[in-house]
Length: 238
Picture (cartoon, helix red, strand yellow):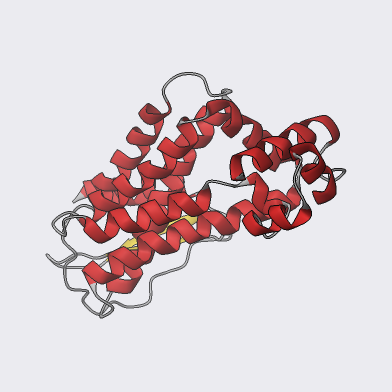
């Protein structure tokens, strides 16, 4: 029934547009009542993303059973579960991508879904790194990096109309994340306050000594790929 309702909804969205389609229109096309619709979807927006709840549950189950020896690799593999969900139905995924670009409300909804994936990954990493010291910060930053890398590769594929192998771009992006973050977190010595970059710029400050700590400072609008690129370059300088 979820699939029937989702298919009916997307037919109407493509024919009439999202805003002009009502729940009554959807249930009429599907041949069911309003009660059946709301049994499966709390709102019209939810029918655009019928598979994310299942995917979140699968990701949570995967992380609960994964080996603890490689936490960064584990969250990268968990992100690939989302990729496989999109790749399983390229036509639907491309249609949804185009629809979310056209409807601001759907874009906002999609961002809330992405945030739930990020929180799931961060929660797993916090359990491995602990909440003391930089453990929680490390978990949040790595989770954000994984999500940004995954989404960058995924959107390249979606913008192409679903042509080619989506895993290639995603694997390349996730390999960059692993290259930066798959190393032990050393102790954080006390550092003086780093000089802030000028508005619209970003900068990296390194602490002295053998246990060097790199502090990345960037403006709010700096793309995640640029942040990762600069950190990777700074780490390589050592």
